[in-house]
Image (tube, rainbow, N blue to C red; front, side):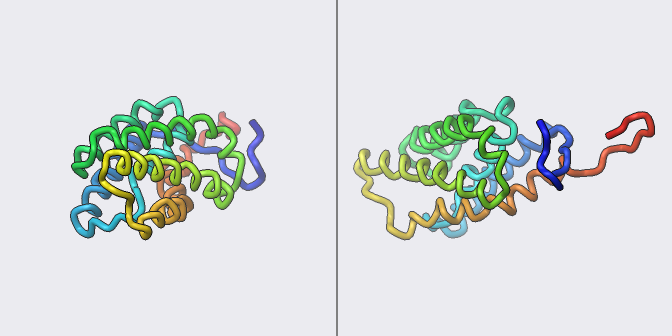
Length: 174
């Protein structure tokens, strides 16, 4: 694969960092829920899941998204399977689109990620509605847009360990 001009060749992703970032996203989501409980705030777990599913689809996939959704269901005390269904569908669509998304710059990647996050939120709202808990407040529909707006800074933070300079070696041309 030929890289676009100005794009650096990345080092392999460290599995410890991947799982640590997922754990940090879960912790941030838990902390956000305890501090404010506002439904319009970004979904950190969905953001980090979509990022790693797009960038590392062989390590993080639909199964991890399902388990992360179950963890979110247990934490928020909602209908068991609500987040699991939404994150699994989002993960499946992210795996399907991962090759296409990576060819675009970050602004256009955000436009590809926004529908994934919106579908996940809509599935959660549909499950809540069918379970008889009512529709989410109108302000809650800002959540996928705020989460997608964080795609560019999240990409910078989550790819930072892969951009560090490699050890120079006079026998290796790269």
